[in-house]
Image (cartoon, rainbow, N blue to C red; front, side, top):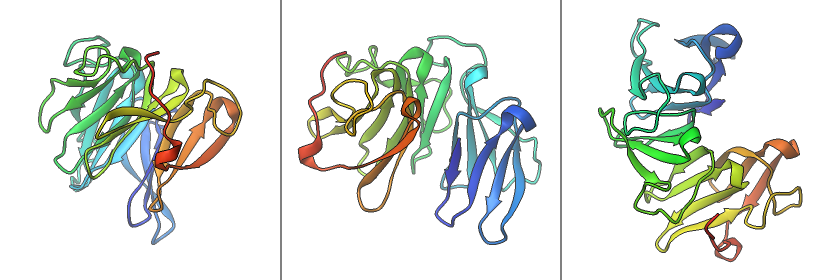
Length: 228
């Protein structure tokens, strides 16, 4: 995984082979190690306070470290106990993560088919999307990516349902991949992550189709969200 900041710096997961997260600095074209980890980071995020988060799928945990801390081994637990489980304080194969301006952490808890919200400073999560949430009609199967926009609307990669869904004034609706798994221009196969640009385009890593797809989201493009 990787994360790009507004100044062009890129944070890159290098955990599987080298047990670290690397930062590529745009200004100097150089790399520097910014976090030591003992597994791959399936999700990376840098919040408004320059705290770096890493979701460790194989350790069922999210860790964080202040980039302003001079001690490189200063990781702290942000979510999860390190043992997989379904409890409010547990995770099962976390993947994508997002931290909002209130420093609340959203986790795509893939193995538990849910999105967990860990409010700032808390280690007990709230299920905001999934079968145990207030929106039980929305059935996720291994969510892997999540984005929260400025209006607090959630956008989720629902990997095993091969789609991307988003919330709005009228609840959740399907945005991309609304017509089943496949390789057509309006279909996805095991999407993993996505990102928006300033023009309203969405870019999706479409894994099993070995491609990156670009979509322009308009009201006319929204599909109906049906229970899976």
